Structures are given as structure tokens and as C-alpha cells.
Length: 251
Ligand SMILES: Nc1ncnc2c1ncn2[C@@H]1O[C@H](COP(=O)(O)OP(=O)(O)O)[C@@H](O)[C@H]1O
Ligand SMILES: [Mg+2]
Image (cartoon, rainbow, N blue to C red):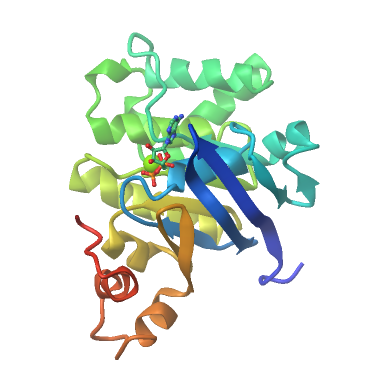
């Protein structure tokens, strides 16, 4: 396979809630082995998009294929290929990091022995091997987030979905998450990453789709997007968003 092969294709995705379009005709492809960022302000439709892509939410219209399988018709096959780290943490506070992971690994169909081995390996990946036996309610928000990422890796996915993984966490965990995501990509993982922090998308993502009001308003490598409005070494993604919408991304 070539590096530029598409792993995910989303075509004309639509989703309305109570008559209001949350996602309004979104199409893009994600190449195998790239970090693709969905960047946009709160309410832009990033989480709704990720939920449709990851088989959690049924689209009103549109198609998605992941690794050659149809999300609408081959959900089980798709779920075997993907790991999902949702925006809201899902952890048992009374269990240790390791026991949380073993539980979710068993839910994903691993044997006890496989789950134990995968828990050890994935805690290592997120830099928490030395805290494996500690209860997660003692962890900082950033450490909990890293456990959640480790859980998303339990079924050895080929593609990882991360929904705003760095919101409200300490800088150390943030850097750990960047390093984890980069090393997963370097190991061949395809990653979809959502954020409303433009510096983060700029640093981490190979390509970015900028979303606003349920639509994809721009798509390309960070430098390409910046070069559309000026010198890419001077311009920021913030000013790209401002140029496209007339509004600040921080509003
Ligand atoms: N389950 C839901 N029920 C009703 N409205 C929703 C639901 N999920 C999302 N929305 C609405 O859809 C829009 C997009 O939300 P969301 O996808 O969460 O955006 P983002 O993740 O970019 O912040 C928002 O206006 C939000 O209020
Ligand atoms: Mg969201």
C-alpha cells in the first residue's frame, strides 16, 4: 500500500437534531497513516461527525467507508478496525488504571491474558506504566484522559478517533498526548483528531478540515491553508479562520 492511500472516505454526511443541521453535507477523505484534524469552534459539528464516522450515531444521509467497509452496512467490521476516545471520559473511578483497561479489553473480546498484556503495553504507550495499580480517581484530568486513550487502543485498532483529547488538562499530559499520537502515526496508525485549539492542530496534524456551522469550510495541510491568505511562516490558523468566517475561533 502507498502512503497516500485513503483509509476513510466520508461523503455528504448530514445530521439534524430537532430540525437544526448539526452536520450539513460534510465530505472528506483521510489517508492511511496520517493525522487528520477537524478544527472548529464549539458547536461546529465535530463530535457529531466523529460519532457518525465511528458507528455510534446513524447519519440522516451520506456514506462512510473505513478500511474498505461501509459504516452503514458493515458496522461490526468497522468497529474491529477503530478505537474511539470520546469527548467525555468513560472510566470506573474505583478501579485501577490497569483494571479499567482489562475490563474494557474484555468487553472488546480479548481473553483475560490478552487483556492483561494489552493493558500493560498500552499504559506504557501513554506513559502511565508506573501508575498501573493506582485507582484512577486519584489521577489528574490529563492522566485520566491518557487512560482513556490507552483504552481506545485495547482492540489494536488501525484507526484512532480522538475527540478533543486535550481540553482542560495540564501541559505535561498535553505533551504526552502529542507524543503518543505522533508515535502512533509513525507506527502506521491513521488518526482523526478534533480540537478547537488551532496551534495544536497546526503542530500535530498532517491535514486539517476547518468546520463551522456544520460545514467543512476549508481543507488542506496547515501550510497550504495558511499560504492561501499570506506568508505561511507568518500567518496563523487563527487568521485563516478569521479570513474565512469574519469571526475569531476563540469566540
Ligand atoms: N444529541 C444531541 N441533541 C441535540 N442537539 C445536539 C446533539 N448533539 C449535538 N447537538 C447540537 O449539534 C451542534 C453540533 O454539536 P457538536 O457536534 O457537539 O459540535 P462540536 O463537537 O464541534 O462542539 C450543536 O449545535 C449541538 O448543540
Ligand atoms: Mg465536541
